[in-house]
Image (tube, rainbow, N blue to C red; front, side):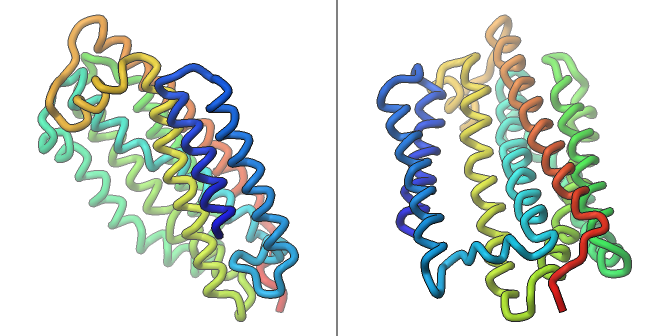
Length: 273
């Protein structure tokens, strides 16, 4: 676990540095060192009789696709809230509380959709609601990618609702897929690996979003926007919004990849009996 933690730290640190500096020897060192340590982690786990993350679980049908779908969904979605708050408080000049309130309906309706998606996954197959949820989130990200400095705020609310419903469909269905595929003796391991993959995607999501969006404004100005102490106007606001578009398009690509991985599970069986 030390090698995994240090490996992820190296890669994340390199990506974070790229948000404010050019690619140099130090960034390359952190990136290469991080990837090498992750490789060492895999080698260690393969030769341990009782590994922390047993790699053999990836041989269970549908397990690898489910875990990777969770990783890429996290990579695509967890920074969306961060980017939207930046947009609403920066170019749109809203206060932190007003910006947050616009996004509440999406979380409420997502909570309503979750139990329905869970029941659908139990009655039929988790593949359909999970994949549909990811496709719905792609639509929401496409709407976010069209936001301008004059777009009606109702569009933000609409996209937030669509995104919340998509997430509400994906999470319970994908969790159901993982637990159905896992052998009975590995339920705890499968659940832990699902959270691990989702959390890795979440952390990398912020790094990728910052890396892409920060090319349009300085890091200090971005921080001031996020804490609500300043806003943007004119050409600088337009440049920052264009940077957000690039970040949302990147998230669309990751989400589409997650949807493709989820759809691959159709027709596959779960854990062997």
